[in-house]
Image 1 (cartoon, rainbow, N blue to C red):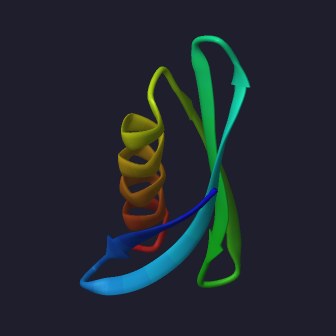
Image 2 (tube, rainbow, N blue to C red; image 1 turned 135 degrees about the vertical axis):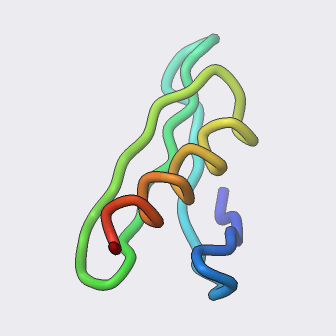
Length: 58
């Protein structure tokens, strides 16, 4: 599913999908860098992706 997250107040569209019963993956690119984050819920995966994009864009 597509999900919109904010990175530095900029909306970014990412893909969030379920890999297994307890693993959700958020994947997408921000400023030319690809990020992929695995978490236990779709919301946690999206938040983790946004945090990773913020961290790596500094």
